[in-house]
Length: 315
Image (cartoon, rainbow, N blue to C red; front, top):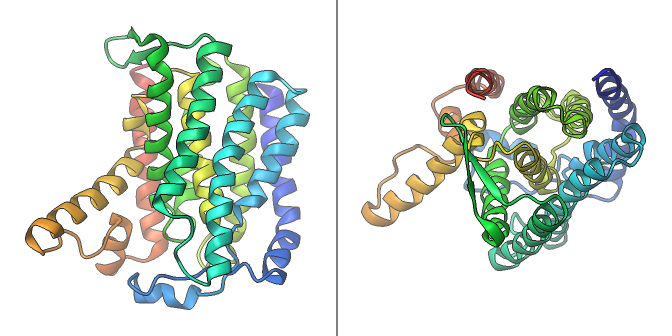
């Protein structure tokens, strides 16, 4: 545990130190954010702010994670999964910049990559780590899925990565909420004696805290899909390693509500032509109601911390 605490602070310090260099390079390569015209009007001033900033905390995760873990196989695997999904986001962000549009990878291409990396991760978990069961929370029992566990992992990653991606819509939101979620995995890792999970989560928390130094309102850099899809992969693999996949519905309640708000908005609009929310995902609804970005971040993070406490009590 002591090494994980040290790793967290070293990661945070390294990220803060690297930030200006990374941001300057993103500007130099003209990797600016393209803002959707149908989004909140207040976001139009963010046009051109460097995106793909996820490379900052992912670089910290890669370097510090490998160094502090001594190339522990579990940590290496968790980092690989995180970077794999980050690569999908990187391709998406790159195409957005190249096209000078808010449209990157096609939905079909993105889903194909998600399925590919989901299968790879599921295969390693099943055949390498001998995972084949899903734990049911509250009743403390496991349901064996056999080879179908791989399919479960594929669906799970597709859901989690997209949910986390939807949460990345205002300055500091996804970073802050995910830090809160990762605190849960530090606690669970300690309780289960899974030091690799504790170290992985601690290093990523440190990286995200450093990123938040530049991403808090008013943001100097955005994580882009490079960061948000990677965070989905990180949260997903932490949940799978600790067998808290279904409990993530509670821990990641903000992710769930963000996703449901989009599903409800689209479904109702298609059927009735009316909108349930002023805008979706739901953080934009609160923006439209006049909430400041910082207020939304604080409220959503507070809800997540309450969910983390509740989930930990039922472990």
